[in-house]
Image (cartoon, rainbow, N blue to C red):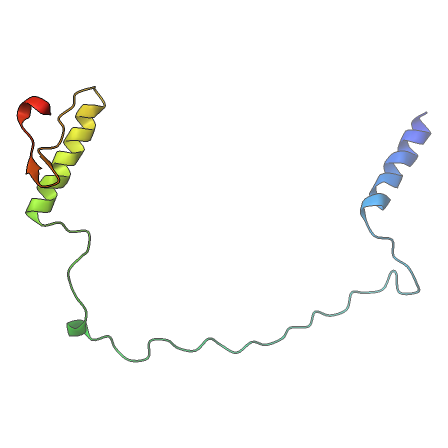
Length: 100
């Protein structure tokens, strides 16, 4: 019984690996062919002009937009606690406080 287990375990790797065939089965591996590739082209060869670029960051908000964003965040926070503030203006028309 032990002999059959040993033979089975010795046979299992032969299923997973290819069998060498022919006269060169135990020879050395052929050398790797390295194909030289040209270096990538230089993209930025001249200095950048600082006056041509805008220095305004797109994520910086002006004070009125910052206030509106803070109001939206506060409304979303209160909505998590079932407190509905509602908008003050709907389509440019001021909404009375009783209907909010």
